[in-house]
Image (cartoon, rainbow, N blue to C red; front, side, top):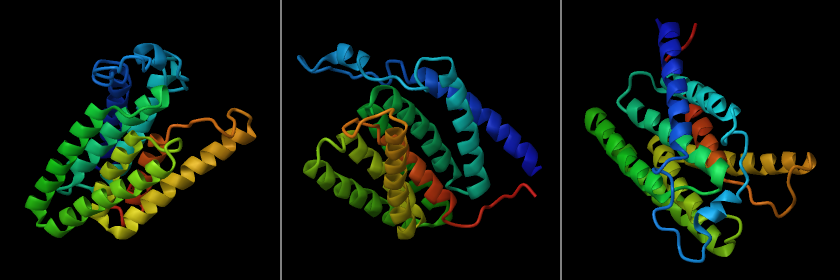
Length: 238
């Protein structure tokens, strides 16, 4: 039964990944009002497009990530009250990650709507399971992570953008639901992953020391790995 469930979830995750990849280039993620003189659409056209961009491999990679991430989340949390919230994180995280890789930005409308629905889903989980302390800790952790990266962005504006600051508030909310060690682990893994990626690209001479790399995918991956490692998995394949 577990194997069949994983196959079904993987297929749904793959379909969601392809749909998210298609949506990443649509009106949902475009800036609402490009500032005059800021470049607008012309500036976006000059940004580098990676393997998850408009090429044929992009939808396939998004589908694979969607299948693996959604299956892992179902195995980790099982049929729990907070499973819908974690599946929502996978979906909105895929959309944000693809846009950040393609255009080096994290759309405000996706972040705000995504964060708002995440709070509602976790509040619903707290209502069902009585985990109000976890919800309160999650909200506090989200604010703390937001404040921490806001200070870092003000100190070094070239290293972090406001989209990264808002995104870490979202991941902090989820990791705070699990506990403070998960919050610390998620932040650490996010920064570590970004540093290792930058080092690998530098060694391979694909980037320079001053190349601006998108930080969103590393933050999301670090949060997901920290969540998966934060406790025993509810379901197993054997």
